[in-house]
Length: 403
Image 1 (cartoon, rainbow, N blue to C red):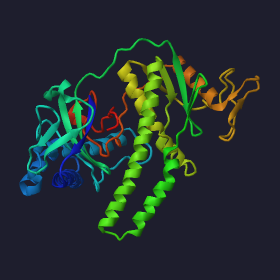
Image 2 (image 1 turned 180 degrees about the horizontal axis):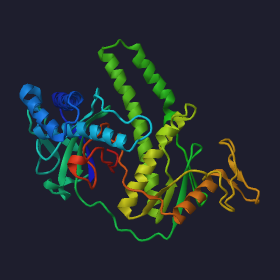
Image 3 (image 1 turned 90 degrees about the vertical axis):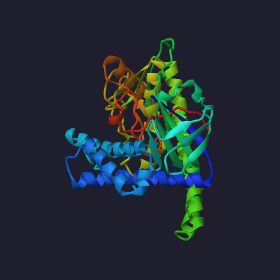
Image 4 (image 1 turned 135 degrees about the vertical axis):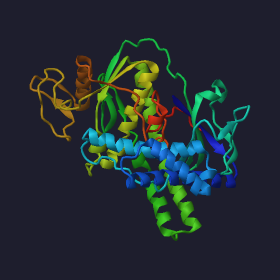
């Protein structure tokens, strides 16, 4: 299962209809969460019945396609199921208690409620929301796939316009020849990563370099009157800057991950908990700007696509342990050179990358799989690769060129 994304071109009244469809889907999801709060222990079938009752009670809900209402129910139930699963696994910290959505940005249709043109360059939404026919602008050719291979169609609102995503059930793997090489990666803040061969990749720091522009746009927002049209325009311009940063970070992680996985038969990296690391208030901005999670996500995605092995190892003592004699050499974060009593001197990150590779080769570790990002499209959706559709809870990663 993979996703193809297109820019949607339409008229202002069509964009308003898309916004209305998104708000309706959010309404159905929130109503299902409220129904669960008032009736603990209800299952997914009960939520489906509640959705049917909502369609009979509210005309604007009935105007939305029934499959889109079902997808909203699945979004609500996925949040509930994830909460129960975290409780059973005794996940430390917050368990992700289901909450109401305030600003949804997508609505998802299943196999009904839409129709592609013969050229596959336009899509028509056939429910009563009035979206109508939208032009699809992009480089992908949908003629390569059968209509029954399209399992989901998703409408997404972003700061720079509206997009249509197609979740396609097809094999996306590529046959590759063995590279005969293995590599260990140590990510950092000074350098984006250092591998076990000593090669370093610079950290682009997209957020840091755009902070001046962000502050300028934020000041423009704060000076506008609340509720005014000018304030909405200023907010949109600010959102476009944030969107550009996130896209730069994602494309950078994707490019590096593709190169690494194509060049090596085995890629080893640290099993970092980025969310916990970002609790350090002194380094939180730099950690989030680095995009370590996006990099790992794409490493594991391309590992599956190209048939490579990706292994996440325990990061404990990888920076302190000597890669030459296995002695523990204590050092703070400010110490960037590893100097052991055995006489072995090396860059701290290079030494850690070698230890990471040795751990991956000496133990089974955790073989990486396709990890999906709930922030890829802005909203959690119901589509996952290789899973039953009714049990899917996150967003499918998309591999698409810039539009």
